[in-house]
Image (cartoon, rainbow, N blue to C red):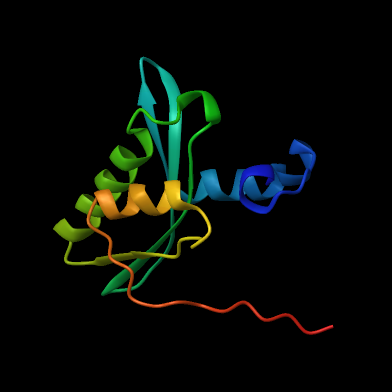
Length: 117
């Protein structure tokens, strides 16, 4: 939450969601020497497309290519099934955009987040 949204939250606030995501079988971990070092989630898949999100690498494991490897592996799996991978990236995060571009993603548009109060 801190890295993505700049907000703090207690880990226990996310246990239900974490349990659901891990039970879904869609969360992939990249493991190096028996240590999970990065993750990527297959958020949704249709017959033709799949949406990837929740790419995360803890700070101590960043800059080692783990996120690139995790995303590339999931994309290869999807492409082998004839499914086009897509993801939404935060334009304000150059590091994540560099990772996605390094494995072949191209920017194709922008999404605007509007909130009404």
